[in-house]
Image 1 (cartoon, rainbow over the protein chains, first blue to last red):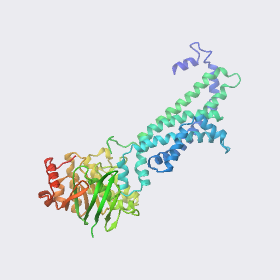
Image 2: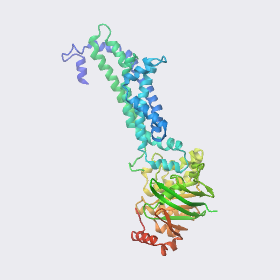
Image 3: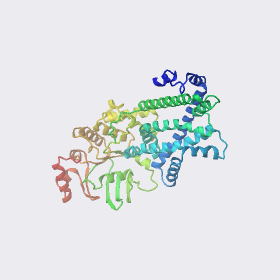
Image 4: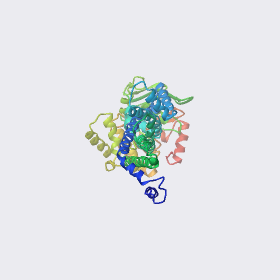
Length: 241
Length: 249
């Protein structure tokens, strides 16, 4: 970091690449960029939420469902995991017969793809809860749905936090592909800055600033989810069956 | 009328027939101990009563009512029949108290405070009121099993099933669990127990059944069955059990 700062003030003779004037340009447009970061954060939250709302039920269905529903859910998962994100966005924005805005189209595409991955995180976590937990819940008279809700899911959610953490940061960084459909998120705004007439020397400075924002957001997200994991942790001997 | 009656119950896992026509009945307040070699069908027999395992043929009656029919309300049946597992199966994410309150709140629709009061009474009954706020991972095996018993008792069952409740315990922890089971028997609880604790069978059982190859080979009062088994296989099994000091892992 200190190197970057040193470079930034041009002390080591790389002034052609990193110019104080270009950093001033970045600073002048900080608000413009931070608004983009706000859109990035909003898009991450809506996409991860959609992914959670669709992915958790999908994971539950893949474990406890039966018949055609399981087949349909798992085939949808394969489809979304097997399609490049840009192609998914082309469908949700350009092909979509309903006229939606770029933010909605990005949420739909990122959210459904995330659901496909989150379903696998939850499926694995649910399967790691021992069969005896379900039997014990059923043996006091709970229905399967009650048992899933009160016994299986609370334990599975705790175990899915590390995987969920990964998925969250992947979605956060992948919001940048909304550039493709013109959404004014962080990267798009950076691009709009350095492509202004006469600002081509500021490309590195702008991209560095943009990547720094992504990095800070990612670290903050990870720490937030770490806190969540600690907050809801229960003593675990590792041997409880 | 008998509280529990098996009528020619048969059950198979694939090609292997685990239960080959089990028939017996027990009255309210009876304590039936089931013994038999590994793989003889003891656990399967128990699990058929609360339909964790489905029978293939024959009928089981609870209080005169067939409970193995397709239109049996399985959740209500399980509410009426408590089960204690060999591996405890305590809900790992809930405290001892939370393990007992869950069924009260979700199945019997107790308001939160009443569920808490009732659950504390059940923990008191098994001598664990002071561990109410401990998580399963913080309890010893014997304590876990007593929470398991309290969890089942809270539903006010008519019949309790015990599936090798002490088999996963260190020897010094078995006594506390057996003491709770003895208390229950004295209070008049109807109990169907798969266990090889001969001392418990001798002092608390009204009847002992010896299961082998999916059939009840011999059945009788503990004193008679242990002292003078009529069947050769029963005698051999009891001898092996005694030579192991009455324990089976």
